[in-house]
Length: 425
Image (cartoon, rainbow, N blue to C red; front, side):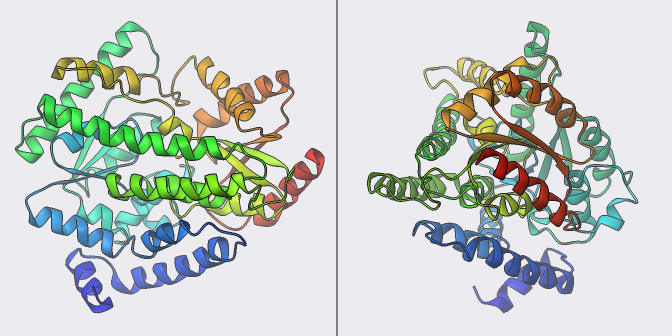
């Protein structure tokens, strides 16, 4: 499509065109500085560069074309929303904009100022008319993973079509029963929205599609254990971020090709950083597009990021849905089991997350862990203390950082990260 056609499409979506053009210009420069300036990038990253260059263009056209064919578009913010059921109802499942300061002043008319940046971002994008994904959605699905989101969704429901799933806070039998009821309620909502009945055949197919995407991301993550690292942390994060926006089948094919290139690079003893460069694991809050600040600071300090313990990372890909179920009931049970293994900081107690952080650091041959929290994210800031103690016991150095989306603290972050990296050396 031409630029004029894109503008016509954005205008029909009621975007603020001048503000949206300014946003894309800033993000384009930001992307160039952070990603295109890297040395030794894999050729397969050209696909991701193209996806990001068209993330508000060609991908939005695909969503609009799907709607013209009678399909529905469902937007989400969280990995607890079972994509398998969305796809089984022949709807499109996409992540929504929530990774940049946008419309902050407008958002703070609906939520308190001391709300985390991610929540203010998704409200701000909507209020400032900047996110074509939000405007393309037939339904937006929230979840009760934190008090901030729960209350924010009440306000968001005034300006967007909202549906909220209850996520339990513990993992007892009663909590599993509650979540199963929510999964069944979501199934009913997808059938109501789309007018399609979810069958055993359609659900089995969607389970395989989503599992295949998880498998390729598991493959990519395993390859990052090599030294020297075959891909930068910035590019690996970009892969994980694009997974929430792109068509899942196309994405899986493209990332398998990227992994083939990574295997060739490993066999040749090549990497994006010198052998024995300090290797770091990021752990904690998700990093939505275009939240690339901390990875850029880390890898500009002489280290390489070799894993992400987050919702945009292994928390989203570590576990598969059991594919052996034959009946619809068996598949629903498998979906419930898989999603109840997610180790979000919303759960109490959450000892499994301590185990998973330590195990991932060892599996990726990480020299240290940076714990990342968004300011005012109480669950992950609380758990940073417990994770830090566990890592100390495992003799794995760690650094806890709390920040937001602004660039005001970049120099302070740089000083702290450089000192940590120097200590690891």
